[in-house]
Amino acid sequence: MPVLRKVIPVILTLIALAGAVRLIAPATAEDHHQEPPGVRRQLAFLRDKLEHGADTDAQALFPEGYYFLNVLYGLSWVELGRRGVDPARAADEAAWALSRVESAAGRAPFDPAAVPPYGVFYAGWTNWLRGGLLTLRDDPAQRARFAADSQALAAAFDASATPFLAAYPGQAWPCDSTVAVASLRLADSVTGTSRFAPTVDRWVDRARGLLDPATGLLPHYVDASTGVPVAGARGTSQAIIQRFLVDVDPAFARAQYLLFREKFLARPLGLGPAIREYPRGSDGPADVDSGPLLLGVSLSTTVVTLGAAQAQGDDTLAAALAGFGEFAGLPLSTPGTKRYALGLVPVGDAFLAWSKTALPWTGQVPPAPAPAISPWWRLPLLTLLLLIGVSPWLPLLRRRLRARRTRPAKTSGK
Picture: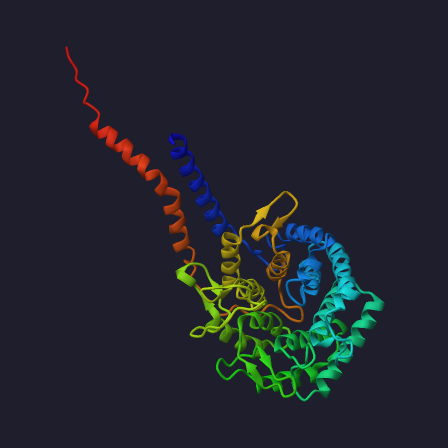
């Protein structure tokens, strides 16, 4: 017991110090030409996991598990390459990921007879990855495929009665169409033309007319035939929408982002920033996309919003979300790898790596909006850590003070 009285305070103090360091240390890049801290080590972990079947395991968790793990791995490398971080390797890794999303396993959950082929989710994300690869390395075959797939996407949007195409038969989520439309804007950026501008501009006009009336945001789920909202705005889809909308129409994107931030940003228990799955003042059930909801907060939504904040130039919020993630995400580092949540959910690491590297692809980072979070947001957590680190020592200090008071006074004689 005497040994425990000494060991436990030391352990708690070290834990508190580690938490304080994670809160204070920068978790995002200081400028847009640097690697965000630890991302390449995250990608090293993910590459190893992919080579050992993590994407197949993820497919058992949700319908796009295999696809998402591979496409996000490739997109994270594209983001690094665009920052000037090892562009040649970034292109190789992105091409490897693209080959996997275009494999039979990558296409398996999707309908080849859909319009566009395999549905707008598959077509949009794949087109975005291919276009990103072309921003790093020209390839005539990939360029021809990018042009053909972009044309097929544009034709599907032009022929549709609704701006929100189906991802699966009879099922349409506006976030999927947002990704696809962003890829059309990217196609014009890559080719230096405005071939798809009429399609994109028409999409924005039509989408503005089908907003969720309760929030003014693009809805979560719509009637696939009419585009009329069926389910109002939700965090999981909003985070993706806000990440891509800046590449579609910066003015519309800024208005939507500010609304999203106003209605979904929270500080549960007055601690670190997080993103709700449902707008403030409303609640609903969790699902496979949101994951478990803790005080209304979705961890997956919070991670993806980090990327949306960076793409919007909201570096204050992005840094706060990343810093809180370093504190609460249980990161585990080795000399060559880094993982979060002990590496138990690799798709979560993939979303985080992608979010930490996110920047607009078709234009400049917009001016920063007014901050939504105080620079003192860490203070409650640092105070809590101080209490955790100091309180175990208080009994020992009290005992020593008591012993000092009761110690007999020394007498002196001649």
